[in-house]
Amino acid sequence: MLKFIAKSIFSFMIVTLLFSIVSIGCSSRALYKNQQDVLEQPKKNTLEQHQRTVPSTKPQETSIFTVIEIEDIEYPTLAASIRFPFRVHPNNTVVLSGQHAYLTTEKHLHVINVSLPQRPSYLTSLEFPDKIGKVLASGDHLVIVTPEKFHLVDVSQPLQPVIESTGYLPQQHPIKDLDVLDDHLYVLGENDHLYIFYAPRGHAQLVKAVELSPRWWLFSPKADRPNVQQIEVSMLERLPNGISESLRSQRGFLQLRSSKNQKVRASPHCLVIDQIQNPMRSARCDLLIYSEYTKGYDEQEKNGARFKYLFGKDYSIGMGGGILAAELYYVGAEGLHHLKAKEGNDPLKRKEGMTLTRGKPKIAYAVSAGEMQQITQYPPETIVLNDKQLELPVGSVTDFQILDGLLYVVSANGFLSIRSLIAVEEYFQGDDPQFISVTPLQANEPISLAVGKGFAYVLATPKDTK
Image: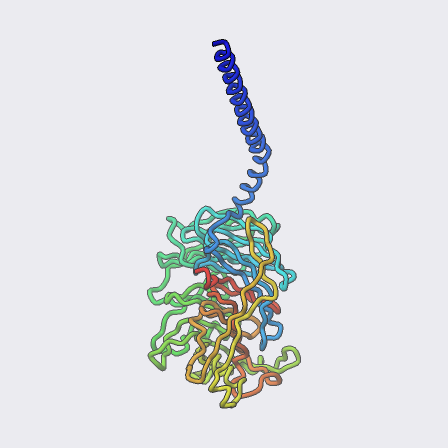
């Protein structure tokens, strides 16, 4: 009996001891976990604060920023690309200002240092509460457009962009488009009014509201700015009088979407509009180019070469000692003609087809959690065009820009085309001097294009992640 009691007491003591050891271990682990949580909390908070500016999203919701070297306009090359984990939509854009490129994605503004374009450097991002679209530069400020308002962002310190003010249209009418010119904002409302704001230092003040004509088409600034001239649609005139007057006076045009929802790009001597119904055919052309040719301009020199503005073969008219012209531009057809001319008449090559290789950037980066890291790249894709194809499969035009007499065009299937708006007599040879080059980019869908000295910048949606 005593032996049984002693054994029971001993067993109880063993169980109690084991339970105490387990409890101590659990308490130690809990204490360690609590201490670890306390120690890691500042780090976690810091990361969360950083991610308020650059939040992580799903990998498939990406956009890509590409730098293209165009110093040799006949042979552009892809210098670099940066992938962002943020979705991009058709209203987002990229713009250059000084040594920085600014681009928008669905809810973010991104700042990239392009002082060395071959090696762009991501600086920071600024998050907005609602979806944003177009970005425009005006001195030390950016204008960010949303469907209901516009933000003025101070970027005098590019590492720390700050929303300085927010503007609305009267009665908060929805915004269709916006352009910036000489410290003035020209805001096109969905209510058929054009609102002009004065915004010299980050704060916009409404100057006037212009009721639009039922037949308005384009806007041209008047000599007494900020007033504008409404250019109306004309079914009878191939060169509407308003366009002729603006080209002759070199007042230019506001780059606001037309009443037909067409993109508008302009220089003092040219006006280019997309998706135009060919007045001579039932088909639509990619772009319609209005240009001016004057004898005085022909006598000038550019880089040691004489040049003049082209006037198209489609139709032209003489006006006051100069010639104003309209030219239809079919990007795919002209590109294919250009490539075939480069291939020559070798029947074997024509039978086997022309081979194009999609560009591969010399260096590629990706932004994750606010940091830019170099990434590996996929092998380049090969495109073969045989003689039966009538057009180069560039797809529809998505954006285009004018700089120094050249027209740069990006297309939906990932192509960059460069065409001259001037004839340089000592440089171009052959029967088709206007078209200069067509370059396959990465497998992406370009959305917006910005062009600077020696480099072009493209904002796109990668096709492999759509």
